[in-house]
Length: 292
Length: 256
Image 1 (cartoon, each protein chain N blue to C red):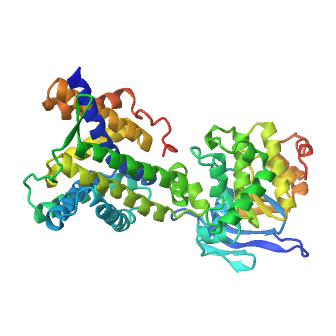
Image 2 (image 1 turned 30 degrees about the vertical axis):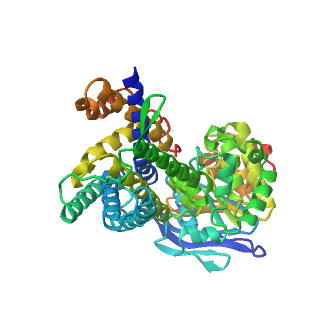
């Protein structure tokens, strides 16, 4: 029982970070109907930026979020403008798969060229600290990674709910033509939305590098997990993605503890298959529009 | 379609052609709308009625011809610029944002406004004119009935204090009671000095509230006249109002 509860705690903390990664993926899909296959590569790119800031300049990995997040926001906006904006709106759903796949490979290539393909990770002095709470171990890094995810998700929520830009985003997601008729600039919203999606990947990437060993090819594993989370949550639902990420984090962690770590990754795909067979719209995807 | 000589013309379409891809749907439309006037556009499916509205709001750029609004040629302007000049387009399909509250939906009507004090005062005016806005303020727009949604759409269209409102099939899918209520609201819009260009498949109701009307056939205006004269025209009655039906049967339900 102790091992099970410990696994659940670990799963929740890990799931929070996946929630952050997946929220960006969902945001981009909601606004643009683009399945961004490069989201995992953005996470890995941010992990390497954090690694460089830490090793070269001694910037704390958590503090580096303040640099990587706005930087990736700008990079995301630039990529949307350069690669996705030119696509014709009728073809964007299909062609964007190829474009973002190419982008994913491009990021991997640049990282492989710049760094190397060997595994690395970010090891601040507190990397191995943990607290004992009621007999359960809580890793300091995982705890603060979870807190960071909550903070970023809360900011994202407030931006979407309380700002004029957020209303424009939700309006575009729910009824693009109507939003345009009211004066919303869809291209501008798309660029800012893609930037925000990349920014969430950046925040998650900084902590991903502390929680996992990574190399330029780590995005393949990440994107498959992220897509599972997004499908389970219901495409277009940020709340659904958060819940799905926590469910998957716990499921994966429990399987790892109770069965074997070998089956941990496979858990994602079993869940994906079951969701596609039993509830293709995911847990919270009853409304294809309007969920953000 | 000539306007009466003493009325102030707000909108004029001259030889407008428009379409999608290589095909032309509008093949030389001439139409005008005066200030404070309701003009109803009727015609068979595919005649180009909705395309006329899109050409005016900027969702579709005319291939040739001119669209003059308040003395300015707006043919080449983007939809946002036309919106800023006071042209609001309420499309045929449900246009509310279903996951946003009624209040947020109405607020979106003033999206291009930069002065938040103006937004606030307009919200109050609109809520007074359309009680549903205040009554269902916190409800998700998607939870409203079809008639209620249409009222909120009309309320939202007033946020920019527009001079011209383009309404595409406002009565579609509504029950008779809601339809009567919507047409009463449309009449009310004209009484506040706004102009309305109305596309209506329910021709009898549309003509009943219209000061003037035009029949659009195959991309051109085939017939014009006052709403009442077209309502009583035997040919129009046969083609668009349903033969044998009393021309005034429904019009009595509407307040002009």
